[in-house]
Length: 145
Image 1 (cartoon, helix red, strand yellow):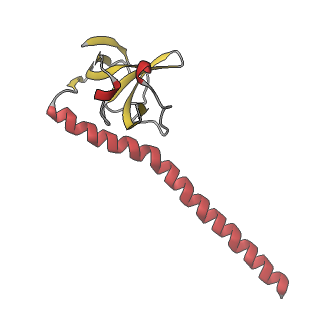
Image 2 (image 1 turned 180 degrees about the horizontal axis):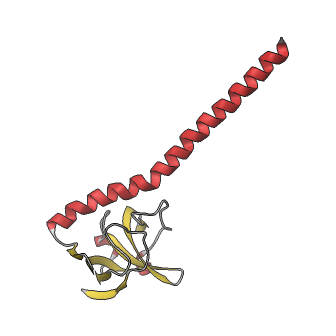
Image 3 (image 1 turned 90 degrees about the vertical axis):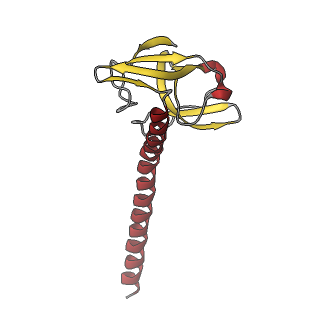
């Protein structure tokens, strides 16, 4: 386990707060599991996000508090898995059984927070398109009379 740095963003709230120290262990992509938090390099920054999908040797991660997932990653882009978080509120050892159960709660939250805005958008689009269709029908009917 090695110290990787302090968190500066809010994309992983409430589990990782700004200023929290992150400790990782190096790993290979095959041993990573959906729900685990990884640290990877993107656009000149180290990012810590949760794995939401794993397929064909690639991983997709997402911040628990972010609406959109990250790009697909391959093994050499990943520094390791987060195993411990320490901060003002105490520490979390992510290797414990309790933390293992919690990861599924946060995985569910992360997935829902990403898909819910998209679902609302699709529903509103259908409603508005339906409204537009109804307005056009009403105009046609008034022109026929």
